[in-house]
Image (cartoon, rainbow, N blue to C red; front, side):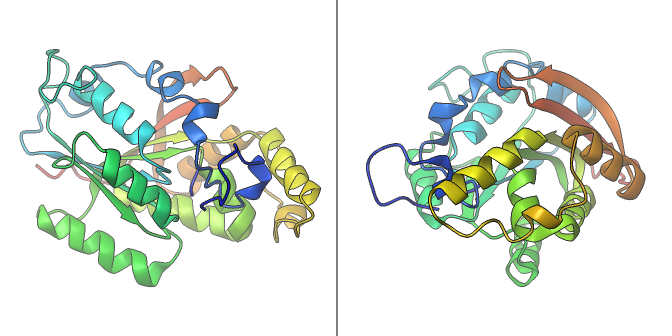
Length: 260
């Protein structure tokens, strides 16, 4: 789901986006398929005592459709309405969304209905030299050192394929260190095989790490094990599976102290 622009108007072969940067991603997996699984009062139940704005981080946001849908759903907003209509939220959320593809980020910025609350930025989350000063600067604007909630929606496979087992472990450890709560939608192993097959079908080189991956099989189980056993997080809830067979897993840091 993370982003790389295509040069033709037709819907691209999925293998043509080796970072998951499909220009029309939401056509394949509509945001409603995810947000409908999440309770509307989720923020209120997770942060009952928070009086300051909540900070969210969406990694691999593509062109922002899902980011906006998550924001609207979690705050109880109706489409096109900029004020909370449901008692649901009672919370203010500042959402930072990043993606590796600058063209998709530009699309997100141009179409965002909530520019004061949702920020879009082009960022390779695996590039520590770019990531650390950027995220630190954003957090310092709010006098914070971490995010209240992170979103990692169909991103883990692309990190894994492009950076290997070590990269996946580093990525999950990073998110765990940055976020008090973390919502993860892992891609199942069958998606890895399909991505590699489509890349080969286009006559491109295989993913560098695909054949050497030792973390494989049930990826939701593997990611849960990594986060709970190596990253000081606990599984709070599984919200079920989307119609395309991906689970939505909510984790909580066991070490983070709420910043009030």
